[in-house]
Image (cartoon, rainbow, N blue to C red; front, side, top):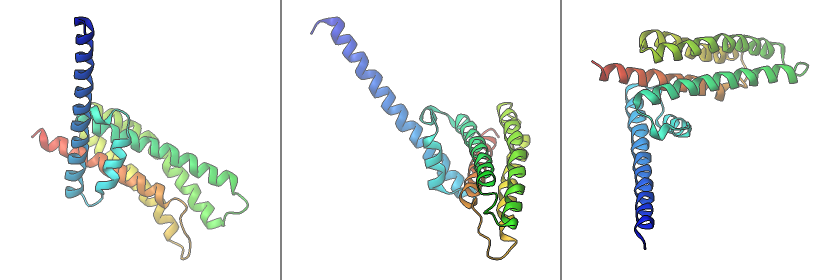
Length: 188
């Protein structure tokens, strides 16, 4: 083996091992963060937290601050997707929908529409390390998901078509809030 070939092989091996260890460290940070979050906040489920953050692009290379932004971004994507889903339910099932369910979906559409600017502002607040403001903004997103779901429960026998989506919004928001709490307690 000539020297340039040996060096390039060695460099490639070093690069692969470095990426492997970075990935392991990223997975450990995600797991440790989610474990701490689930222990400190009953609204954070360990499995949901870890699978959500691991699915986010570049999460394995992120630090704690980066995981916080990813959780807010995941919440934003979920809000946008849920709003679109509600719009489709209203559009495609107008004649089939029970009037009460349609009214609930209209309310949810408005709640999710209002939550999108809140989460965008939360991203700005988070980036500026204004965690109190971000906390208020993300908490309003959690309230929107809860209010949406509760609307369906007000009438006996009505089943929400949004339960899973509302739960995901709530949990993603809880993860973001928990990570912010960890960041704040680490900085004290």
